[in-house]
Amino acid sequence: MNSIIYAIADICTAAFKLLPPIGALVNWAFGLTITVGVIYWLKYDSTVSRGGKNYMADKGE
Image (cartoon, rainbow, N blue to C red; front, side, top):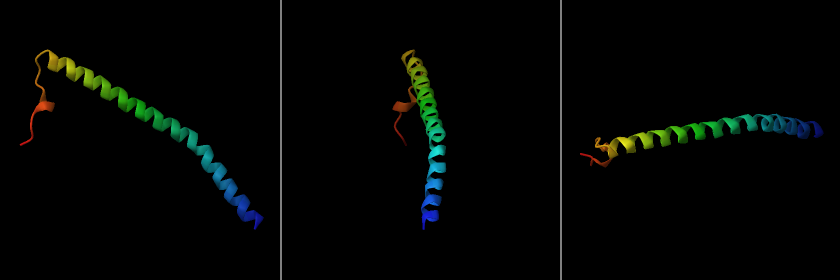
């Protein structure tokens, strides 16, 4: 019975060692997505303010 408990503990320990790199990767992915979105938003806003077409305001057909 002890060997089963220790096996489960070893599996959990191995899984928990994998979580920090995965968490860091997810943080970088969110940060990159937000950065790209903000850069696009600022570029789009500056284009619209200079008289460009505001395609986001168009109604669907």
